[in-house]
Image 1 (cartoon, rainbow, N blue to C red):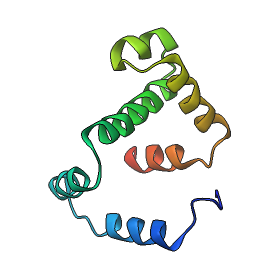
Image 2: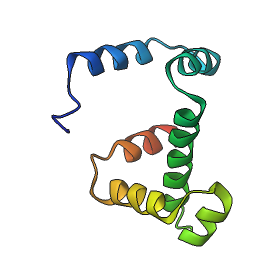
Image 3: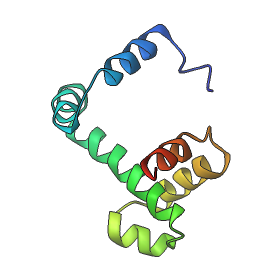
Amino acid sequence: MNKKIKTEAVDSLFDAILKLENREECYLFFEDLCTVNELLSMSQRYEVATMLRDRKTYLEIAEKTGASTATISRVNRSLNYGSDGYELVFNRLNK
């Protein structure tokens, strides 16, 4: 875990997110919390991660998502050398 982000404020934010009960509540909270561009960027990175996991090429991913090769590369690095957060979520969604 990255010690730079482990703060009381981040803990409080994650506690708030864990209280959300459904997709509609997520929309309400994240629309207030994030700018449209921040939310779209996060969803784009998640879509890129999903496509990388499905062994799509950078070209296929860039065409479908509009993500830059730098973004795709950064997400790929997280998948391969990160904290396994994506993998945790993928595994739970596949159950």
